[in-house]
Length: 268
Ligand code: NDP
Image (cartoon, rainbow, N blue to C red; front, side):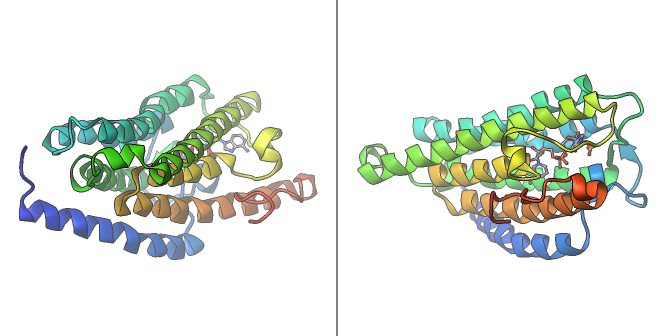
């Protein structure tokens, strides 16, 4: 087994601590500055890159860096670690490969300006950082404790609940992203009021699904690193959902369903 050096251990724990510190900073800054892409695009954030290329590039470290780091983990052959990791890969195969393909399939010539290079660079940096934390956590720094991990009633229930939240969240996320892309294509690139399913309850079911996914992953992985990522995802997407919701109310006024919340049904 390749040993972890003291430097790697220090880097890992510092990175896990950092993700917890970034989360309140993210909420605070996003209350004042909405990330300038999509509905909130504005000039001054650098040249823009077509959306499919941006998403492929900025999410790609979650696949290539993860695969590069995997052989260095002491649990690289552990079926539990590999099962947990497969959930991470499942999400990122969708986000890095399938979602950009869908973006280009539903792309309207001249519709949508792409993402500014500054956002792409920040997201790329975050994905490098997060892939490192999550992969090292699952494949090296988490202890699985032999038989009890799989056989204990508490563990079995926790894993079952976590898997339910993860797959439920993923279904809502993928389905809502697809509905929005279809809506955009149908409106020839113009924004419309999304209708049906979870959209009747919240403005951003795709964000709701994404937050649920990472919460579910954290319940399954049961590590500080995974809970840090779930927290960071909520810290990023809940303020953005609030901005989207306000944007819908401003744009569509009385036509926008009043009972709809931003991201948590009936609550927020
Ligand atoms: P949005 O909901 O803002 O947009 C998704 C797509 O739908 C875009 O192509 C957008 O076009 C289009 N669209 C959105 N609303 C409408 C509408 N009312 N009418 C027509 N078209 C519409 O999501 P994001 O682009 O922010 O995110 C995409 C995915 O990435 C989501 O699943 C999200 O959960 C995930 N993500 C995860 C993050 C994380 O921290 N883990 C961070 C950010 C995103 P346009 O781009 O032109 O607005």
